[in-house]
Length: 159
Image 1: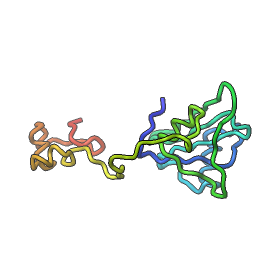
Image 2: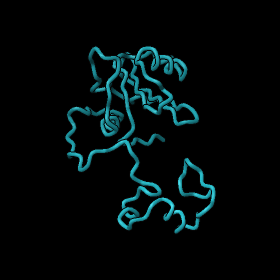
Image 3: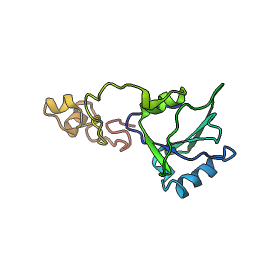
Image 4: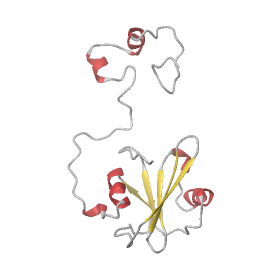
């Protein structure tokens, strides 16, 4: 299953791709033609010449996912064109595209608060902890983690 995050970078390859290409072929295409590093977690979206299918490629830190969606009937109603090799897309636009919709014709509610690249959740970063004047050490002590080794990838957990 693919989870789309509003903060995830999504790039559509503007030009059609030979769908005989597998993971390694698409990785090479990302690097050479799109000028992007596929190891950074970007979600790449490709289409075939007839616009009847999509391939999605992404890296999760341990390996690559290659997802194929072939439409039961019809062709894509929308695909970007232009001189640039790739086109950036929002997660909500990709969700519409995966259902063969037209993302440029959809109406969106304005964002209440812009998304930022910095995390707002975690020890010492939570709004509730800051409101109470607690820092990361005090949060760890309150959770009984004082002096225990914690994993840096999962802050605040004793394992």
